Each structure stands twice: as structure tokens, then as C-alpha cells.
Image (cartoon, rainbow, N blue to C red):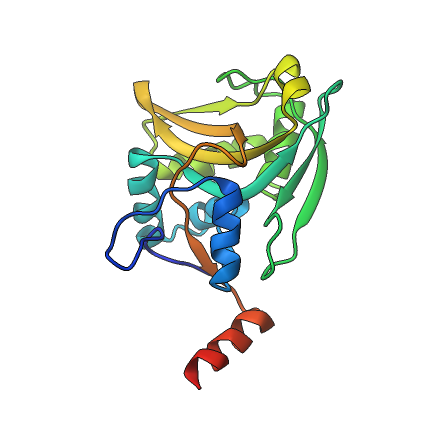
Length: 204
């Protein structure tokens, strides 16, 4: 798997900023997998400095919109996290988990640990997850944002984005409307039969 170094641009090098719904369509049309929350986490864990610097630049300028989507429940804290949502290149993965109400705070407990394990598709402990995210900027404070139960009753399908916020924050935001609001995103090259077929077709 290889994350593209630069976020998506138009031919004239105008940076593209879209919502999750439009990004998914964009990458499907290009036969690329869209970057997911686990892809970002794996990049930090492997310490890929070139890609990390590119992601950090985007975190500073805007959100990075991921292909990770959350379907919340109107009445309970149980939700379904889907990575690579609606992708035609990568098989989407669904994880059912309890997602606490986190209004920017970080509760270091088992519920938060299980939530972040599902969000980043890892078995790492909470301390390791936080240490890994800190690789992007050790001086920033990690802030977790999820909708309140009343907000979940109004809107259930939301997207996940990450950014460097004000006050020295590194925000993991799990409450963006998938069809509203925009940000940068990255394509991901994987060893996919569909991508290989597309590449052969382009070479003819």
C-alpha cells in the first residue's frame, strides 16, 4: 500500500476540497482507494516521514477527509464504523463499537480505547495509539470530538476527519456530515486487481 504524497489537485494544480461523498466518487472514478483513518495511523506507526510531512501540511491548512464513516444510533452510544466506505477498489470494513460523547476531551478509559482501536483498526493499547498520533506533532494536544446523543438523533451518518486546530490541538473529528463540509484527501495505491486492470488499460 502506498499513500500518494500530495493531496488531490486539478490539472492546473488547484487544490481540491470536497466532502466525503464527493471524494469517494472521485477516487472510485480514478480507480484509487481513498485514504482512511487506519491509513493515517499506519503511516505514523511506520514512521514514513515523507508522507507524514505531506499529511501534516494538510492538517495545518484544512481537514483531511477520510473514507472512514460512522453510522450512529439515535438512542444509544453504539455505532458502526466503516473504513473505505463505498469503495470500488478496497473492500469496506465495518466495526461495531460504543462511541462515547467526547466534546474535545480525552477520557483515558477502556471505552475510549475500544473506540480508537476501532477507529484506527488496530489492537494497540490506548497509550500506544496516543503515542503514535503524537508522532505527527509531539507538542500538540490530542482532542477527540464525537457528537452528543441529541446530535446523533438528528444526524446518524457522519464522516471522520483530522486536522491541526487552534490552541495547539490535534483534532480527531468524528462528526462531519458526509455530504457537507469539505477538506483535502489523498488517494492510496494498493495491490488491487482492479487497479492493475485499470493500469493495463491505460497503457494500451
